[in-house]
Amino acid sequence: MSIATAENTAYAGLREFLKEFPGWQVAVDNGCLERLFNPREAEVEVHMYRLPEPARMIAERCGKPERAVGGILDAMSEKGLIWRWYIRGEPLYFLRRRVPT
Figure 1 (spheres, rainbow, N blue to C red):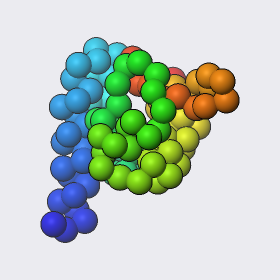
Figure 2 (cartoon, rainbow, N blue to C red; figure 1 turned 30 degrees about the vertical axis):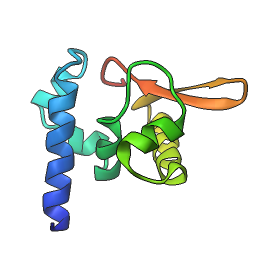
Figure 3 (tube, rainbow, N blue to C red; figure 1 turned 120 degrees about the vertical axis):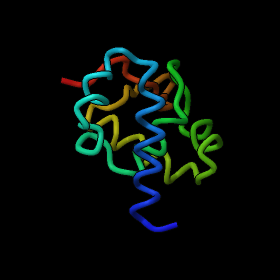
């Protein structure tokens, strides 16, 4: 699979996934996802849940190493794309319900 095909697949999956979240519809409709998410972030986002969970659980669903997914999740939280909470010192990640402003 070429890089362009992999990127298109990641964004297509993200568009389909975010249809469940009305607060993201404007980004889906206006083609903003490519400006908000890089392809690796798009690929990880579709494996996330609405409730807080550790990076290892998301990594298992992604089929990727925990350390790599943890770095992607941290970058996404810094950009405001997802939420990150710390409970007993462990970072937990979960989806935002709408486009960050």
